[in-house]
Image (cartoon, rainbow, N blue to C red):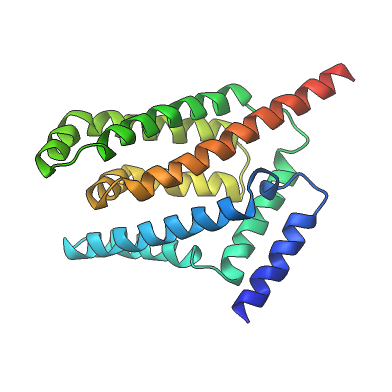
Length: 211
């Protein structure tokens, strides 16, 4: 039943003629993104629980549940798509901030690339001491830029605010403690989508200016 609902909602969202969030995701990207995020947030929830942070663990687990699939996940995607249609698709957006966010994401991925190449625990610990604050600051910059892009109250802004609260609450440290591969995979997909999003928006603005 759950798979049937997923397929039907996928067809509905992907066939719409409006420029929705799904215009910037391939189905495979969406599957990979939600799978990685779901796995990572479950692991974060378990990590937080082992150190006695039960409130933080519950927050992470609730996020993981929303990413589990089925009707709840697709309802969230539909909500973000409608938010985009209503608030952003026909308006000029802060493309400068979006390009800045993409640049920050490139720096973030470069830092994670350094970490994944290290083989020993000692090397990773040394890297963590010297680079964590830089990665944390880049994360904050990405989210601050996205809040300047998604300025209207709605699902997209609420998603960024949720991520901002989690980052301030130690999400990046938790993810790096668990290993950087899932986080790197997530950021690569988000960067690719953001690049496509900003390029598409710039093209749309150019066509409107020609008219």
